[in-house]
Each structure stands twice: as C-alpha cells, then as structure tokens.
Amino acid sequence: MEWHVPTLADVLEARLRISPHLRPTPLYSYSTLNDLLGAEVFVKHENHQPVGAFKVRGGVNLISQLSADERERGVIAASTGLRGGGDDLHPREREPGQGCLHARPRRRTRLPRT
Image (cartoon, rainbow, N blue to C red; front, side):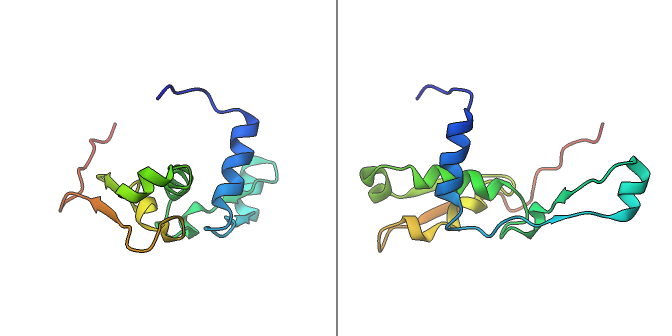
C-alpha cells in the first residue's frame, strides 16, 4: 500500500467514519493559561476518549476501511502502548463472531527522558 499525505477531504471522510463511534472531544479554556499566554486558548481533552488518547481515532478509522474479506479474517494489533486499544474498541464494524486480538507486553517499555 502506498502512503500519501492526507488531504482535507481525507480528514473530513475520516471524521464521518469515526464520529458514530466516539463522542466529540471536549475543549476547555482555562483562565490561568489564558492569562499566562496573553490569549484565549482552548485545550482539547483527548484523555476523555475510551483509551485516554487520540490514538483510538486511528484504529477506528483504519478498521472502518477494511474490506469484507479483511474483516472476515479479523484483526491482530500489537502495541506497547495505547495504539492497539483503539482496534479492540470498534465492534460495530465487525461481523458477528469476528474479533480483534490485541497483543501487548506485560510491562510497558519505558523510553529514556531527554
């Protein structure tokens, strides 16, 4: 599969695929942050999504685009973090009896701080 830079049309199509499965991400403005930055700022709280991160959107979007044959075979996600969690949270796109195996290490790999 060839990869391309997403266009605005790609983003809008992904939004249509994702929106039936995830609630909108809340935006909050904090007066202390606004004062500190000298502007009205909104923080998008992806931590309110089911796995606590935006990464669930990618899994939902990808699985939504699988062919019938690919869906029939099922999905295996391997992840050391939150990425694979989005794949197991997308049951509406699966046929009855179809599943998702999400393989994760017992302990999360810690990256060195810079």
